[in-house]
Image (cartoon, rainbow, N blue to C red; front, side, top):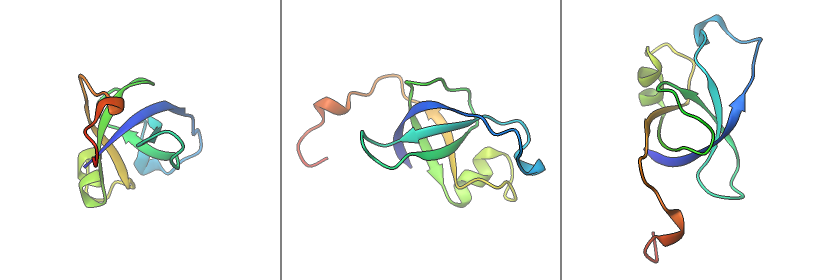
Length: 89
């Protein structure tokens, strides 16, 4: 699992039928990191800190082992302050 921040919605009108109508969101784990696309399985908004799963866990969390997802949001974090983490985290 990874902690990431939702940046914005990704609009994709042409996609595989298996993706259905689940929203796609742009997420990053920290400022300046490479942006990633995650399937939103729970209803997030930009600015939310979220818990993401990847690999086969991402497919199952999105709804099926055959679902074409490599990163899925499975939880919204109520409070997360990345600025005040202990050293070495």
